[in-house]
Image (cartoon, rainbow, N blue to C red; front, side, top):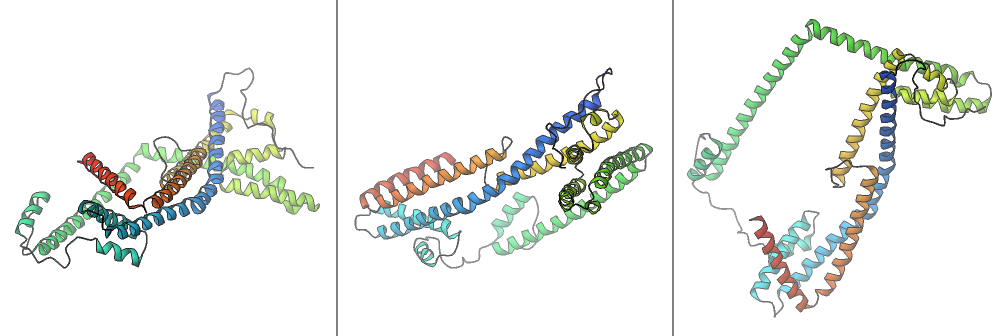
Length: 374
């Protein structure tokens, strides 16, 4: 007959008529932290597919729509450039907008028509510049980098000499770094041979062995009770096969809490058995739980950071799966509003008078931006 799952989380009670145990309190605290990190990891695992779905089906098409609007604006401005009512100042603004916006769009992919238009408004000089005397550049490099460069001649020769010098310095720095690392390893090896270091290493090895033993003992008890090959009833064999798969996953992940929960689930132990564990045994469990908490915290922090970077979300406070999903949905709504406004703007600017007013506003915004950064 299938066993019922425990109705409450695993905790350990203080021994009656005994002083309050710090080790038992640590066990309960670690269990709470572990449950919290497990729930957080489950939240990320549930949320990541939703984030990727939003990116693929919402953000990417909206980004393409924004770029399409920018391309249409470049084409519109190119057509308006030759309008008889366009003055010199407006033409300069049109040329600046076409070139800057077109170059940005070309970074996203090839577009022959757009490239031809942008080339028309590229006022940079054509052809390779004539070689110049490198004396002035050589003096500038010596002043900036504090080194004398060999050779001379043209600017190109001076830059080649600078790159060669920088490569030489980089090789020297790498060699010094390797030597410093070797000295550090030698110093660590010497420290490891001191009596104190040897005792500390032995203590850590003993603790690691106890941690493995604690998990292994629980695993063996579960495996003994749940081995499906010993069952003749097909339904019971199927149930135990599923449970044994969960046991194997928990054991592989060194998941002490998962193994204890399975013991409770199949009624191999009860809460009284957990409460009756000795402080020494609970102390061994604490070492396992502490390592699990640290590993899960690292996994969750790594997921949090990667999500924030991929979806450009703020990291000035802890990012939760719910906050990440909310942030990406807000980005989608903002992009939708931007696309709708861009479509209205493009339609309005087909009127040459409105385009001129827009060019004036664009000039003012460029001036304000330049003043801000000066």
